[in-house]
Image 1 (cartoon, rainbow, N blue to C red):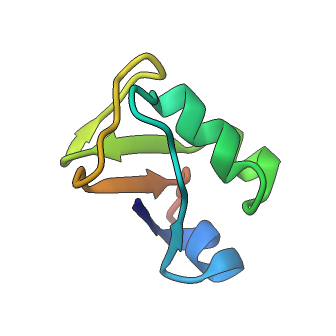
Image 2 (cartoon, one colour):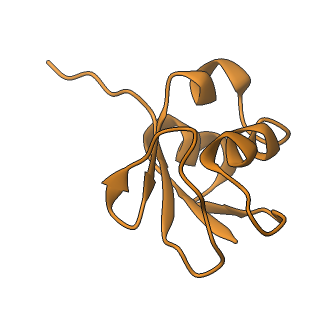
Length: 76
């Protein structure tokens, strides 16, 4: 599954990362897998979107879903 990255995560790891998840995986499982390749402190504060909707940790993710990790941003 390809996961799109934005802002500081994109700066750290590029525009996307590929992860392998078993059938029945959840956003919580995705976060655990992403923690292997992304800065943990930033990942912990980031939102996960599945198919253009913010997703809670219990939400299932399936092959073919569009998944994005959106870190907090600030502006001035």
